[in-house]
Amino acid sequence: MKILKRIFLFLMTNIAILFLIWIIIFILDSYFWIKISPNLRSWMVPLLIFSAIYGFSWAFISLAISRWIAKRAYSIELIEESKIRNYPPKVQHLFFKTREFANQKWINMPEFGIYESAEVNAFATWPSKNKSLVAFSAWAIENMDQNELEWVLAHEMSHVINGDMVTMTLVQWVINTFVIFLARVIAYFIDMAISKDEERSWIAYHATVIILDMVLSVFALIVVMAYSRRREFTADKDSGIFTPKQNMIKALRRLKQLSSVREPIQDEQLAAFKISWKKSFAMLFSSHPDLDDRINKLENSF
Image (cartoon, rainbow, N blue to C red):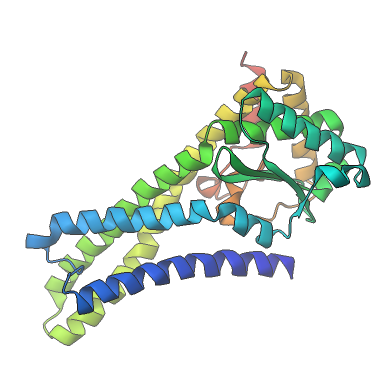
């Protein structure tokens, strides 16, 4: 049920964002005579502007509500300092380490929480450095020692401090813009080539746009995930600011061991900010590098 809840929440959030934007487009098109549908000869620049605004809206609305979505999708239990003594020592240690790392970099302490999950993982999400959330799965806390957990926290805090989610949103914005723009330009050419009837042409054009949006989004995802994998290496290295190198390598080896026992459950919007993702045949669509590659990179760095 929890998995279905997460999938449903992420799906409905994206549908709601798209639906809202399309309503605005429909109103502009139908009642204010601001034509969004492209005529290639005279609407190339307006189409590009529209694509940028559309891509911006999609990416940044998702960013703005990222903490809210994460809390509800994962049923995260936020830890309050006034009740910290009710939690196990490792949770207490992580809570105060989160504060220590945040103070070290002069940012507000992230909200800290735990969630029930059959995966050994942690993630960070935020609309800004000073409004962030760090969460650990209960299974990770149970099965990793204090030093290993401290490195996982250091890794996630590196993402927060480097503003990785904002950077990822900017990358997503650019990719979204090109997907939206190219889908409509290609659909225009297809429509001009095969359609004769004006009414059927309108239907065919929009059907083609929807199909192209989906197809091009698959290729766009490959680009975004390639950037995500590169960023993970940087977060691994930057976590050395907070914790010794041997803790990092030990934690990655432990993650590898635990990942071979439990299969990670992935949610697309948060997967890019989790600590691990098991290697599979679909590595092109993985947000994280292979754990062996990360270990080798750390062993050869510093």
